Image 1 (spheres, rainbow, N blue to C red):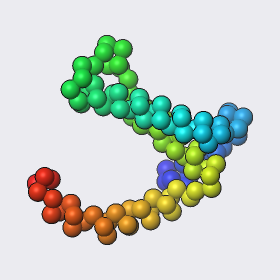
Image 2: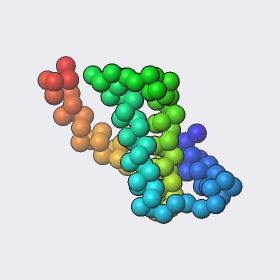
Image 3: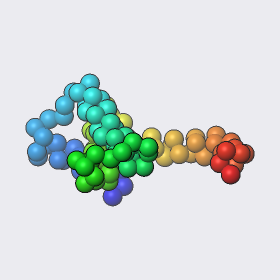
Length: 108
């Protein structure tokens, strides 16, 4: 599924199951919460913190998908074509960062 179709799927889901979009500030808070859940898994599973028994069965992919869902909601409700925005950002990063990253001794 491409980003455009994902935005459309989220919009359709909201219409069928969600009644309406939460307002932008609520969705921003929700996004922060979901990113926090991803951070918790990463910190405990891949970082130096010990993983609690209750966290061992959490699905990182599911939590990342929660982040994507809320980002798509925010894009929809603010009129952002996320696919176009992402393509533009990728092009910018490619031009700006190619030499910088290849020249970075820390990455070798």
